[in-house]
Image (tube, rainbow, N blue to C red; front, side, top):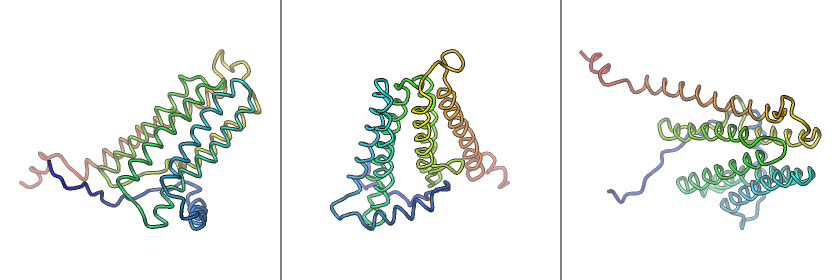
Length: 234
């Protein structure tokens, strides 16, 4: 086994979400004003702490809906930490590509799990349906990580929506929970919130299937089968 460190080639970050440009200007403004003692690692862990607030906000909503404000606060904290950690590293030119990539996405996976499981443990959404949405998100994450390896591209948005737009969507869902409550289900034990989260999960899974097919077709053209290549040379 070689003792040489693995060198990551530059990753092409593909971010085409609606709020990308406005968010980038805001993040640059924030990074230029953060004190020097604030580090990217601190912001990563702050984002994870925000996910903990979201989790407990949803779980404690079984006691009183006012706890949902804790979840909404958690979304703001999670956005700040998750969005500024890598931005600060790039702004200060102190990137650590392998370490940052590993730590950031590991924390993202844990944060997303806490967030979605928290929704499923609230009185508004059935846990099984929430787990379908979690499966869809994690499948898209798998696709993004595989694309980094085979294409050198990190896709950060789908259907012109990225993590920030998703947070706004979930904040809207949380406000709707507070406005409509968790009365009887619309169809037996299935509530409107169940339907909404289930549809989001189905869309995420469908996107994974489509993106997998598109990427496989692209790779097939770039890397033809050896028997076809041999025949073309004859």
